[in-house]
Length: 126
Length: 374
Image (cartoon, rainbow over the protein chains, first blue to last red):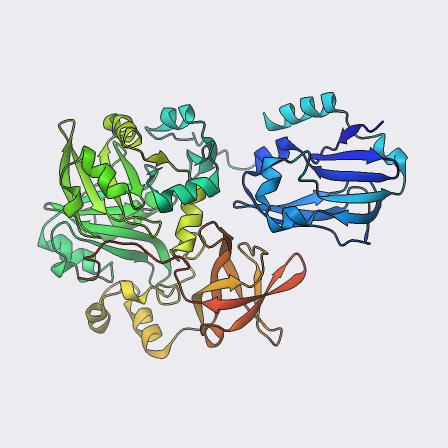
């Protein structure tokens, strides 16, 4: 079974077997506004938990995208680079950012479930 | 313990209307202002370019100075303008400068029957008032009018929409204005703006502002936030005080010499005139330019600019994504010798150098009505 978990930096992560798909949450897109630029990590590169693994920019400002777990980047979503507005349209599904071959699944344990994240997001925006 | 600053955040007369229109607010120059509404910055930007956008700019200063020919003479000692020949109800873009020609503020000055109306930046207006009071030696009646709101309507459909409410505004030329009536109140309308589109700015009593704005909305205009105001002005190549302009930059360096009267420079005798004359004669070391990144990476304010030999030659002062250009746009200052159009430069963003080109301004071609350079 694949459970979606969430980070305090407003990323979501869905683990299926060894591979995790990572993106940013709807709440994050609402805070950012219209996303107009995306930068993704290089395929084949290694990223460290809580390290920078991409950038999203709105008309207003640039924000780093962090990876909630460590691993090797096995796939990136070129569609959101070509058309960043897709992230605003469908952030938690088709507009995923990158896929990782996860190094240590136990890194998932410290992340929030949906209920906790929704509460966290509500508190952090008020 | 530091100095306790007790600054109450101010709200404009349209605050409730902004709230009811689902505005997201930011603090700007001590005011709670809408940065965007539910449509978002990109859509608001496009709506202004294609239809008609309403901007609450009531935070800006409306300074009325009353006086006769003596006032004109005294103001000519301050502004690099030929005010003696400024016709009634005509406006000029100008600057309040220090002795080194550094810019305290950029402004629009309009000749009225009893004197002048000067529109000032929100963040500068209180300081401007102090400086001008001192320079004018308190000889004239000066009112920084907080009882009036200022509303801009911008975009190709604006003239038609506004003419539905205020008959006769279609006859105004660009950079000129007149008094009109709205609900028996005198309102002053100029044909001007800050988006690169045809448009108007309306100065009216606070108590009429919401009613007036709702009428504009009824006729098809939409409220637009400060976020889109910034992307629109940047595409139009217009300066924003605190970014392209400040006390360490002169109008010549800002590439705004078109706004300085040539006759006045030759005669001198205004604050900063020596420096302006020197810079116009000998040239400047740094100058404001447009910068078009080749790729998609957005270079923000403070981004370092390098030349092809990796020499640091300047910095970005504003950079964003231009929705009508569908790509990144920027302005900045570079050393004069690298300011030629099509000069290849590199912008350092997140540690990487990205190619860009010096380009002419504006990025987006203006749609002003006729009657501009008279």
